[in-house]
Image (cartoon, rainbow, N blue to C red; front, side, top):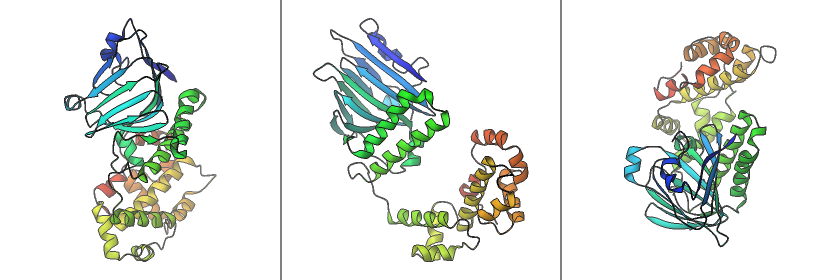
Length: 344
């Protein structure tokens, strides 16, 4: 549901510093916020929450200033990425030692863990409007793990930026008609489109993927495609990816894993998802085991119980309750990779 984050006019604009983070003082991040006095003061921000992210439409008829310093960061270590789509007026952004100006049709990113200053300037019709999306940094890094240069305006008129903006706009305007699940799927789609575009934009990425990372992605792709093959082994993957088994082991070791850990943990996650979303009438446990690459249902049951604490039959019978508990804590399966404990 869309809600008003703040609304300032000539009667209360002096209170903007205390009120710009919303009623619970939890939106955005700490900083110095100021509204320029003028003949007409009309500043409004409306918000739509989607999971941990917020889509905010900011409209103003006067000049706005915002500054976040190292002092603010030390006091409030909120780590988010803000995705800005400028619709009218200008945004002057000073971050990472450079100053850039974004105008209508521009897309720009700012980071809350680096000091920056923003000036929001109105156009000739005394209008300023931006749609911006606040995304926790750890969420954004799921879509784009590489570092992104902040404050550089990009043309949002390019197809990919336009698609993402339309999805965010539809979520903001029509979100009440959608289920929470669909909203999250749409948000993730828009973030995927943006991430893919940014990753291939030479002005944005601070570093390209290393050869090691490219090789690792090739390994993951091959494993995913052949996950259901019970004969899948390190020699097969190494040959298909044009690398030695020793180098394959090195790639995985760099990421705290091994080949057996990667494959078995991946198979268990796929099986876990299957058990969570199907009934025995649709597909049996034995068939799930074979279709994710296990040679026998007994082997599958032993490993599943070792990781999830219960056997697949018990898990499936209480899937909804267990799914709720799983969402509130890190998956047990992650221990086998992060703890470098291979499944045998």
